[in-house]
Length: 98
Image (cartoon, rainbow, N blue to C red; front, side, top):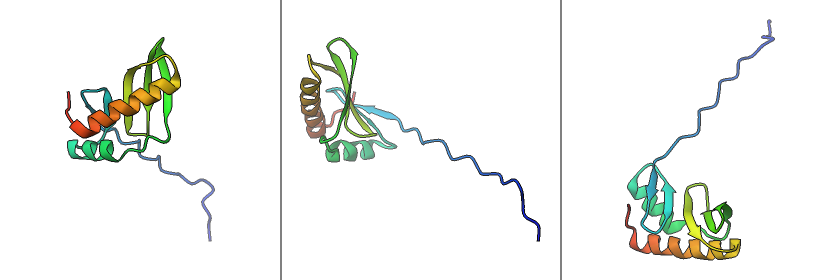
């Protein structure tokens, strides 16, 4: 019985890229369809977040891998998160796309 000394491992598929659905209050949802974007924005948890100050006084707040609120005006990270949660709630209630 012969054993292969070298084994070729297939390359993993690249991560799927979804279109960005932009809502009027600054929320951006990456989803395959408009319907999926509406579902994501309605069910997102805001308990965990990642906030980045992109310019002095402007923040991007990411709540999960699919939902981000961009260009949030705030002086501190906690103010940015609070404002982003508010904008997310507005977009989740009204669901108007740009």
